[in-house]
Length: 208
Image (tube, rainbow, N blue to C red; front, side, top):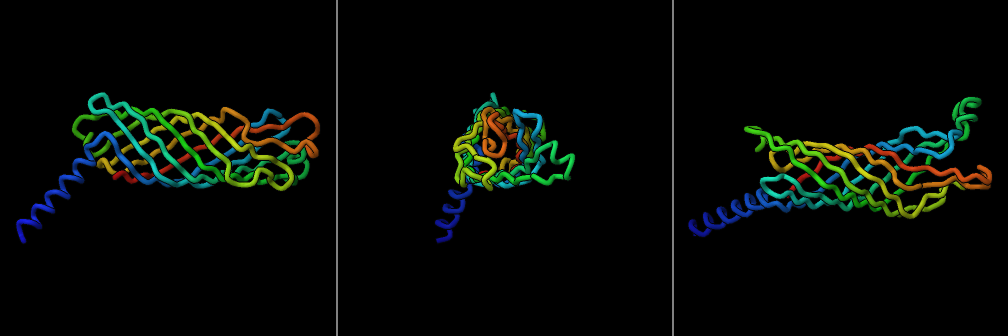
């Protein structure tokens, strides 16, 4: 019996070690984001608002060259406070509207792990960049003022650090590539008012 337990313990320990050394890793991720909107009209502006994100991830990094990718499937809530610059100057943010959006977000990043001598087994910095695809879950219309688009796309630039090959702390900036929302023409006139998302995301991940 004792031999069987020892064999089982060695097998579990070996499996965990193999998982940690495998170029393929899986994990869970959660964090916060800070979002604003960039408009095609100078008459409108946006204030930062915080949201949240969470989900699962997969990662592959080729040994030796330390180049690979990671991809995540996330539930993400973003919000921004939009206001008319002219009316804000006159009334103090009288016409502000909170534009909130819930997405299924799929960031796919190319990544490079910076191998460090001696401390590399404990701390590994990394750089990431890649496309970010978001599919709207919430209502398109926001307070009869703004219409969210069903699909949004951005390009992420990020950096982070892996600790003892288990925990990853990361930050990235998402640069919106297409309009994520537009103003209601009944309120803002014939000229379309369109906005692109700009967002910082800070996450923590646990890798298995």
